[in-house]
Image (cartoon, rainbow, N blue to C red; front, side, top):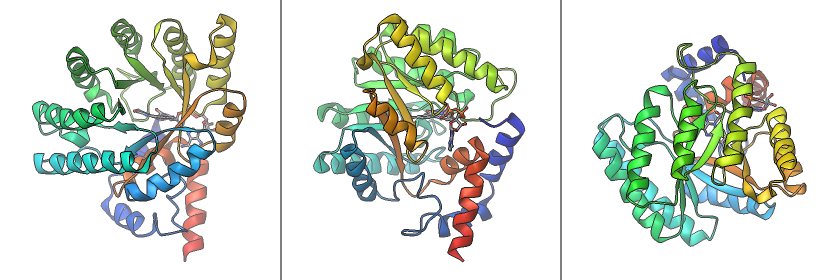
Length: 311
Ligand SMILES: Cc1cc2nc3c(=O)[nH]c(=O)nc-3n(C[C@H](O)[C@H](O)[C@H](O)COP(=O)(O)OP(=O)(O)OC[C@H]3O[C@@H](n4cnc5c(N)ncnc54)[C@H](O)[C@@H]3O)c2cc1C
């Protein structure tokens, strides 16, 4: 995790359209594209091929069709229709039926009703075909509304859905208790956005300490939580706590992002833990990609090396 100013720097870069155009041109070039390490392809068909290979290595998977912050109901409708086609392709391909999505991709910025309608359009066939649908958590202006929409759908009987909570937000212990009371499945992450001091811890030590406390709460009282981190200390703390409490390895799962700490992914599987990979794909990969760069300076060097190789 980078410090807040560095994170802010990458979030500002993500807004620059010239960089977006350059990245779109080179980033996903067949074979050599520098973003390919983190993005499984621009189409669902490409992603499915990547995922089949990963499943063969014992990884569980969730596919994420990249896109966020759509501004019109026509764009939200298009994203929803894309998702419906993606569900079909996943069913036909036989890969694991598990997707992650963002509410701003479905029109949350347009209006809440549009977003909920679109989410239901996805959940109906998803439920019919036995999918699990994880609602990602975006930045803090969306925390309340995301949890409210989640609770509404839960109240209507949807049980194949889960949500994400972020340890950097000071409010999260309350949200964990609220979601544990429902019996909902939570993915715990540190949090990827640039957040103000008033709502979020800024120092890694504080975010990590909160992560450990929340992980313990989820393991004790939650329903099949996902501990989503690449941080060896967080992973060790989870393993230690589960062992100390005598919790079975299938009481929870670890999750990581496609292309990050592949060594650790393999090691955890070899130790008998469940390990799910979050596999993003789609043409709108730039903001996601910039968040990954903002997390680790070494990734910038990796990308620059790729760029120079291309010339
Ligand atoms: C499955 C999954 C789903 C997620 N969903 C969400 C979500 O819905 N909302 C949200 O806000 N955030 C989400 N995140 C991102 C998360 O919030 C963090 O930003 C991200 O996981 C980095 O934090 P970390 O726990 O790995 O620890 P950090 O403290 O950031 O990093 C610890 C160590 O992990 C490794 N590492 C971390 N990031 C990288 C990277 N980009 N490249 C290479 N190595 C790295 C390095 O070794 C680093 O030293 C998700 C993360 C995962 C794994």
